[in-house]
Image (tube, rainbow, N blue to C red):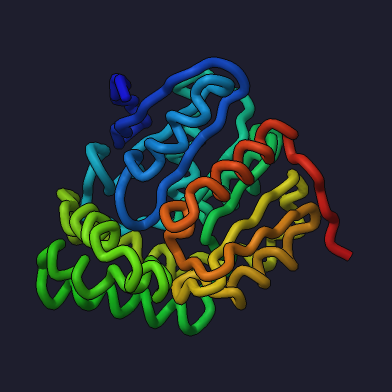
Length: 276
């Protein structure tokens, strides 16, 4: 994929981003692990019909990395400032995991700027299992201070047992991807804490934009319990569960994921279901 990355100055921070295609803007927000490259398959699939923007969050990839407290609301402010820099008035916002938590704050802070939400393996509030898994992954990094060791201890949390057992070469590539991080461990630790403290559950009724919630039924980080809290709190939501898939269902079942996301965006909300 021939894409030129650029830098945007948003106050104290610089964000590395890509901006390709034409049409209605789609802003992609990555999760706790990785950077904008987590979205490259989706960028390639969507760029023919949409203006697609993906970026490295503060504290990830080639964006500014500072060891300081940060919240998902802070990262939402960064997202809105980037949209300002790029002249994006309104956009569909797609977030995975922590990125979905950030997207919720974007919708709460500036509802007029969000056309729709797609929340992938995300949460309004982590359940006890999700908190334990995130704490364990943080501790593995703190104890070892090695991204490779962190990946070795964490990769089984991201894919289902069936996928892990059936596709060892694909699991190895995911482990290499996680283990190849170049970010400051302190930034991961700070954002891990941001996920732990994220709680938009009381505010979800104010998010009236159409929302697509997608989750894997075997995800220990954003479990079906966390997914239910998110779906039941949103007033205008469609929920899709990926059977026999985990946190990285986007990689486990990519064709199904792209069909759902593409159909959702093409329909500007598609077939909507309103919670009763």
